[in-house]
Image (tube, rainbow, N blue to C red; front, side):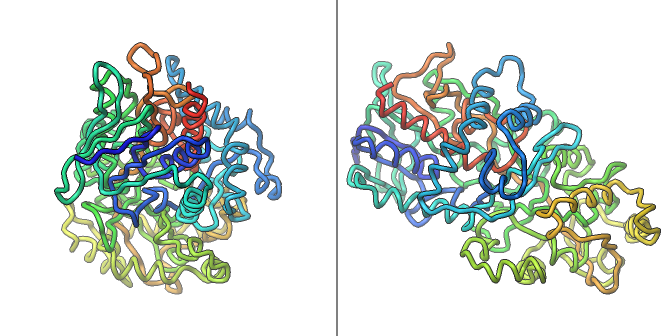
Length: 537
């Protein structure tokens, strides 16, 4: 058996674990950080992320003429969350996040070399339920990879770096309690190297959520999305986000709440070069594309358009007979609007290549479109609707698409543009016009673009599945990130941070996320845990 001993044991090497370790060693305490993955993947899912961050009344907002306030942001958060009357800790964490996101996150990471694109994104505006009243989605210049690298650099070069021991390839299987007192954790080392035990006065769970475990995702499928989950659910979470620590917390008397709340996405496609089972990519759905059901008929009567309510998109698709969908567009739309969430498919932002980034904005992202069309099995192209339907059917889906029906829906949509702007009467077009009123969306959204446009060919069809992404529920914690037992009392020495804690309190977001709130709440919960540990609470 390998044994490790430190003042604090941190389980998980994602951004929440990194920040916890950094803040704890700076107080002079020793830390052993245990990660299940390989050292080159240190940073977890945050390292792979796009890097959007939620801030209130930031310098970027003020420079852009965006008037925001904590009062407005908290009202938006509560509206989207739909907290229940008994959700005390989730609501308290949401209030703390809105209050402290700018001073405790933005101003804390900025000196570490983190900056943002000058135009703030406006996502999750709300459809039936009001969401973000103003733009708050700050994109890290460097993506989540740049943010993670900056924090790892701070960790490695801190004056107290010698207080930290990092071990990789270690799978923590359970918390270790002896006589009712927390001693540490136990688990297995990779490649049959045996078992290990890590001992500390405090244990911080930063092991992520449950959304990499498809069995748990299906088990906790929300009733709003139907009794039966989709046959195909792609994995966009971390492959080791398996819920083992949630189970161990419950076994030892801790509270785990709201696991049915998940932040999944509606437009998942198979990764062209997968590195885990059922690996999916989350597309940013093209707003000028027509969203069709499995039969190739336009979903309605209200059309699906992204940017307003991601959860409602999933609900609508899961109400269909077959719980997957298609988007129909052309190459012109794809070049201007197609995007994939994550650092891997945004190299110009990730690698901070300003000229290349501006080129893509002005002339289209040809590299991304070509990669997806040529290498993703869910993309097909054609020069006519009939040929497109034939190629869509060749993918061996449960139902066959009738080309004439799909073409009728496309022609009905295109006919709107022929009547002129004064006569547009399609809700998708109205929403596109609304989106284009904001400069951040105008540069990435086509204007009055028909689908069957000979100058915009070829046609593209994208088969899209629900993709599992983030856990909105998790281990219940107080505002010091201390794990709470069934009586609501803190469990001595045990903390949970980041996605493991439902990003705070076992469900800080409620039913919906305002987006950009995940990375920031990882940092906030970690800093709260470290502060409590350092103060001996």
